[in-house]
Picture 1 (cartoon, rainbow, N blue to C red):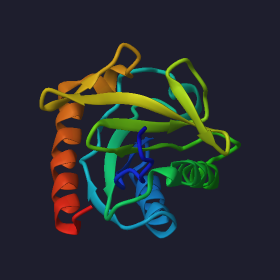
Picture 2: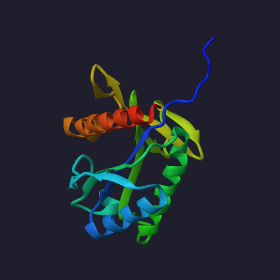
Picture 3: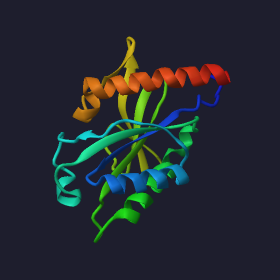
Length: 177
């Protein structure tokens, strides 16, 4: 019989898809105030992987990834997703989002995204939120799955998560978690 134990805490990140740099700066401040200190922000890059957001957010979209400082408990993900939804609404105009914020976490074994949409590979975690298994760690790197969003399966994105995983491992060692 296995003995239940608490899992290791995780590193929290978010993907932000936006068009206006000024909006991004204000959103980052709200994320820092509402969730926690931002440890790192990746330079914005053109987001061309899907036109899903164009009708609502516009064309010529950019994306940045941010990493939050410190460690978080896994069970905080629903609360964090609800908070990012509030921030999206705070910046919306005529109920159209000007920024899309997708929080998730990095663990030693995988990368999980929070979503409000259920699907076969998404596990309900409470408060209307599902956990999307996006990448798994195997043979020294994160690897995409058949349902992984194409942009999360790109080598450049995976290298960011591998780098952040190394940072996370160092934090775990220092805190002996």
